[in-house]
Length: 241
Ligand code: GLP
Image (cartoon, rainbow, N blue to C red; front, side, top):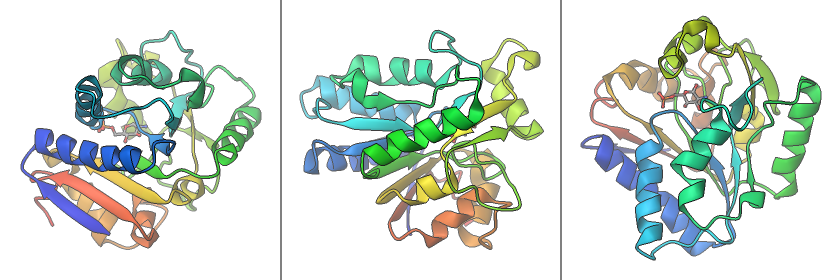
């Protein structure tokens, strides 16, 4: 596990974007696993800038996103599909038919999850998986639990996650209480993992996840067992290391 400590959010975002561009340049038809949340926005902004400057070509890239709220459709501005369109896809030359987000509108959760797992598998593996980090150690939407979920699953979001995500919704009642997420097993199958974390509010969980015991109560701690993980954090998030 490599930990790169950067000066601030901008520096973290540039470093993370550099790692993703290296992947795209070295393998133009790579499969990227993508993440939402506020942390990767700056990373996507850099990728868009470099695409506009002619340094990056997304035409052969495929993407699979980590998760989606159950019940939100593509037009809902809080859906992760909408997020990805607005923060990356519509600004670059990616083929939208090769971008995937779990289908939040599929009411049959077993079908939604097995269909999505099949899509990820059909690409023959993720080359580089980008991850953010929840305050309780969740990755994707895999919440603290008694075991690590293996494949794409439907989760009941914890109260703390609902509260944390409430800032994006008009009122707390609007925050979905369930989500479809790649499992920890799905995430761990990626060849390379890149996790970004920023801000003093992430300092405690960064320490717990990467220097504490590997337990399903801190889902991100499993990354300690992955053979190729790069963690890019800013000084605030690294302040307890
Ligand atoms: C959400 C997403 C996660 C993300 C986390 C942290 O719950 N499902 O993928 O990592 O939030 O978000 P932020 O980067 O805004 O702190």
